Image 1 (tube, helix red, strand yellow):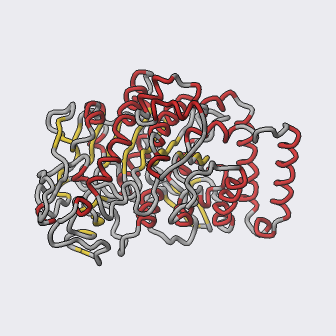
Image 2: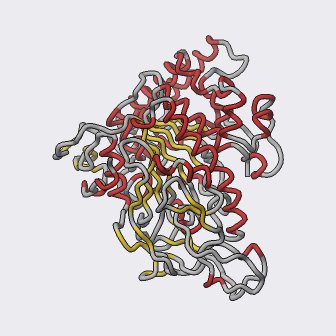
Image 3: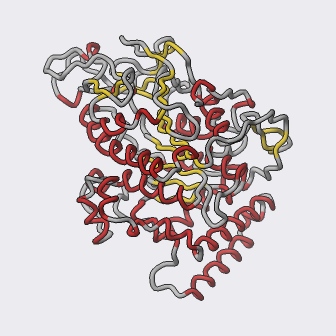
Length: 497
């Protein structure tokens, strides 16, 4: 597993080419078809998605239940939460311990506790992440576009030099890489609307400048050579003209960024040390970041502060005109939120990773007068439970063995996939402040009880905030492809202020 190598341009071209191949055969996307219906004015100009990839347990984070401390011989069916509850800035909303800083800004946001993941049969992370990010169940007969690509295609960039869709923190050389690539693209919409991928936020500046030591002439020659290869490659020749032209336009956009003042937004060394400490307090106060690019040790050591720096980068990119920004804690099987064992210990570490930077992002955008027009969405593909796999009325085969008695701390936590409840946290962008939507049961199964929210309705809510109709469709292969499943998504209007 590669964990310590920066993304070089060969890796980038390889990744971009592979992602493009799946879309080339899809033909062209035409102007939208069908009735969109009246769309009220947008309440947000920018969308920032904070992705908790791997399955964030709702009872361990934003929907805590009865706390049971660990002791040897403990029966797992007694455990609903392994952290005690804490107060937030809103009297009737409690979080679990370790999320104090996000709790302190809860009066700026809305919390959904009744999100339920799709019923996709045997639970696989990549399938559910595909479903969350595209609104469709894989596989599809066409390459379904990512949520960010739809927004990029429909609304365009806020700044002509800035990529409209930027993806921060996810590598594609670990675990289920091909499955992740399948939805982290623009699909049939065309490469120009696909993501600008930045795996390591502290190296983002390198992605918007020619390789070190390379003259402008040599860089231009490489670009011309690559374009000739594109024309000569039979795979691309057999693709649609629309897709080839879209790829060329994406290259033109990249070159425009290289020479634009907007490129400075990618350079985190422009930020004062005090700010870096606020977003990444565990990153040796920013010293290692500022002093060198050396990476060493375990994955956990390398990952310290990475999500926090991603949130700081997201703030800078939003200021510079990015339209859609996704920052992920990174999905890698059995790491981060993918807690198949040792759940309590892993979640303690994950909370330390996300608590300060998310709260700081909210505060910074608010102080800059941007929070009102920037929608922040924190989400995960599904939740977790200590006993149930799937949902109560439709359980599936257990993927994790749970002992009858907990004899070791590694057994303490939520280790099975649970799809019948989950949390989505939203700040800014026209959402209510201090609002709680939905309710779950206080005893197992901790399923949704009121105001269920499914992915097409969540997407419709996001699109409505961005001024896009959930009935919008693009024509592909002479039929409409709706931005929400069959155009049926309905915004959750209770969330809007």
